[in-house]
Amino acid sequence: MTLPARPGCLPWTRHHRKVAGTLALCFAFELADINSFAYVAPAVHHTLHLGLREISVVTAAGFLGMFAGATAGGRVAERTGRKRALRGSVLWFSVCSLATAGAFDTISLLATRFLTGCGLGAMTVVAVTYLAELIPANQRGRVQAGTLAVGLLGIPAMAFFGRAVIGLGPQSWRLVFVFGALGVFPLVISGWLPESPAWRRTPDAGTPLQLFRGSFARRTTMPATVWIFLTISYYGFASFAPTLLQEHGFTLTHSVGYTALTTLGAVPGALLAWPVADRFGLRGPVTVFSLLFACAGVAYGLTFTPAAIVIFGFLVAALNQTLVALLYSHTPRLFPAEIRATATGLCYGAGHLANAFGPLLVGQISLSLGYPAVFVFVGACGAVVAVAVLTLAPRRSEEPVPVTRTSRR
Image (cartoon, helix red, strand yellow):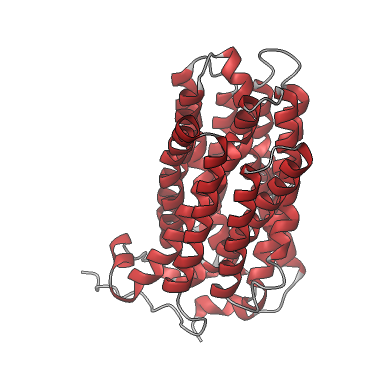
């Protein structure tokens, strides 16, 4: 038994609950901030005179920042430790969210959303890697699902906060980003967190190029593909839903309200992963839930009654978070400790790099083909996720191969 593996074999304790609770709070502010621009976009459209294309570009800038943050954050976590990288990323996105509240034109909004995205992407990668290394092996999936479920409460909190404040005045949307800056609170209480024993005993990080060689190539390709299409499909939906509903004839208040109701599916969706993540592995659960996600996405675009919009939107949000919980649990497990954060950052970041262009694509689909076509696209992405997992995912019994290092001189 190697020393880095030992924490995964220890029993579940009160200490583990405190770690999971602290990270859940970090996730709550991170997830609230990721979704914040979707809720203020209609108001920003009026006050800063941004059109649909400009909104697409600003949304893309946030996801491009998440790619940069995820890839850089993984490398930083390998070199400086999980704890230091986690706390630094939380501080970064909190400060940058506050800066977004002061944006005064398209350029300043682009810059602040990009920088905020850097912190958000880094925080996610470091947190899921940290949990994978600290939590007992037979409970990692459940803890990832539970931590995500609690953290997801930040999405409806942000959605309903946004709905409450956007009607107060033409500049009240800025309060949404002030809310996001409250992420400094979990930073204050996270000082007690221990460093990951796996990191302490693997000071020499592997190189990213190793992830595309030999036995690692397939392990890297599969989660990267899944993250790309899952992220494009869901954030294409979430980022544009209020704006598309408004352009389809619903009022601004109703559009944001319907979208806020759909976010309530996120928490029960993450909890759907709880009973399956540690029992059935990756292939079966991800395939089934991705196909259900695809069907719900298409159904959302083919219905125009308020009740059906809320129901199918609820299902899209729920099933997306089921898939995210499963991927949070299994992506770090595919790689050895020496290169785990780097690999997780690269795979997770790939989804957000693609999604930097995804909003532009979704906006163009809407302009060229209309409202329903956007959600047919969402469904098609869900189907691609299922195919990628079935054809590329390793068998459950396959363990990651240790990193081969050259000796130091």
